[in-house]
Length: 113
Length: 116
Image (cartoon, rainbow over all chains, first blue to last red; front, side, top):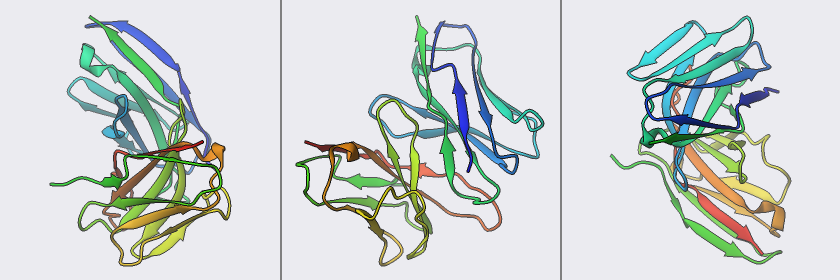
């Protein structure tokens, strides 16, 4: 089955700096890669996603890049704000299942004012 | 509109007891998923329903776990003879399941289960 590795496990940045979180996946048939933000005690919420026919996607301060050959994808947050502090999870859906999300272990992002 | 809701928000039980966790998906969503999230980990897939039927229950850890969705809307996750290792947050998600492609899974707030 699919295996998703996520790094780093914790990331601390100063307000206004950029943050980058990286994930790798094992199943070359995976074709959908969402990123979820989870604040303490709250539900995971989708912030951005990318499909395998696209290399990059941007939404205001957030961008995701996908390298299918290397089987890795990254989340980039620019001009970080304290409210960006949360746990971020990457995930992948294998082409075989078309629905089963496999998550990374998460990255705790702390943005210091 | 209303999102995915789950009840109870917290459940404390004793080892060996039976528990039921409920999920109300977004109205009109045909697909429903259960995940389990242990402390410091990402959610792990348990089971997927398309309509009333369990299309994939490969993530259920053992036969103490069972889930139903009798009318294709509300789902109940049932755990028999609970063990301390079952303690986790149980998340429910739903989606529209657009034919031929993946779509966003909307998560509920979860039920925190503690087995003493």
